[in-house]
Length: 126
Image (cartoon, rainbow, N blue to C red; front, side, top):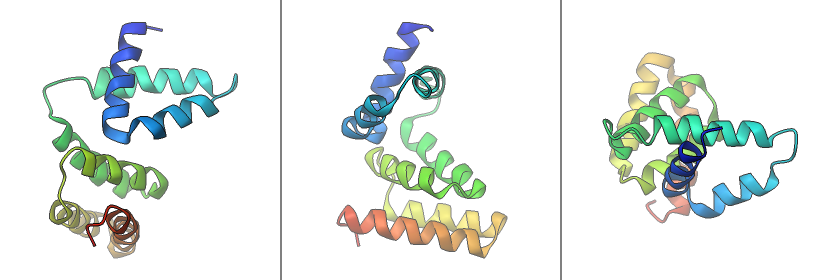
């Protein structure tokens, strides 16, 4: 593995998702899951997120739309917190969920609203 890419990815991952969350995930990795955690950190966060062409806020907004479309609500919750860390506002989150509803259906937007409400309440924004 490219250690430089891993280190860049680790910094980017912690900046978006929070150091405590990332360190907990890495500490929980075992011989079975560690290679994936390391590869994902290097590839997704080092290669993808460390690319400066798209700023973190915009990248977070894109992720919410894509992950919402896929219906991966556990990941959507994690990235909703990350989006807030990257400066995405409550109003922008709502607008993203509207787009998910238009293109992916009302039931999926309702799931996104449910999770967003939880995250925003925990963040003191609701």
